[in-house]
Image (cartoon, rainbow, N blue to C red; front, side, top):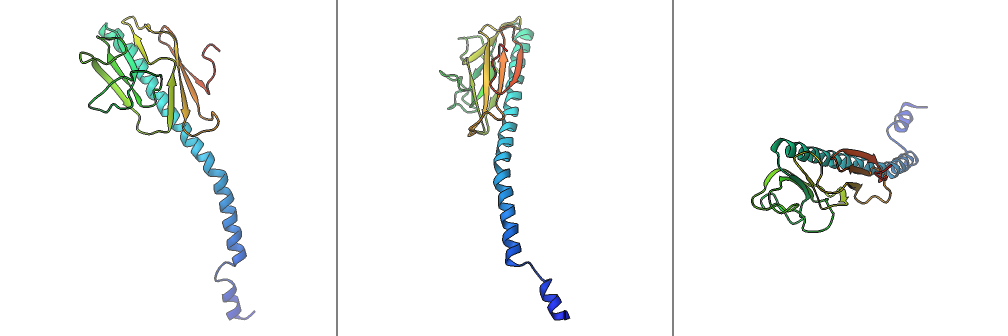
Length: 185
């Protein structure tokens, strides 16, 4: 092999080598991207579950500390930071939730009510539904409303990978379950 021939053969990749590398990277991308989006959806669910669990615990502790009823309600999707309102109907909590001292109409944010905390959903990655539109804690820490559960589902997922259920019983205890298992189990 002459020096000129040797240099030419080591300068780059052949078309076959390039096409093989592109095919392998395409296959790896096709396999990895759905897994990555599922993982991102599951992480979004975990964040929302944690935020709601914190809000429900806060409602219970504030009711006991203040000696007043404290409610957590689903935020109205049309509400913003200046015009807070509970959802007038339905059980979709995807827009967020409000924790407030409930001195007026139970489960509705009145002008006289003191807002303690709000959580406004910043992304549409998680769908949150519940069996109730609001939960009210009395000063003893026990829920005035029935036992309930919240389902957290990653948006756009065909299966329930990453889904979670948060169960809250009448005494106000929270329990997190993987998927959408029955709270009685």
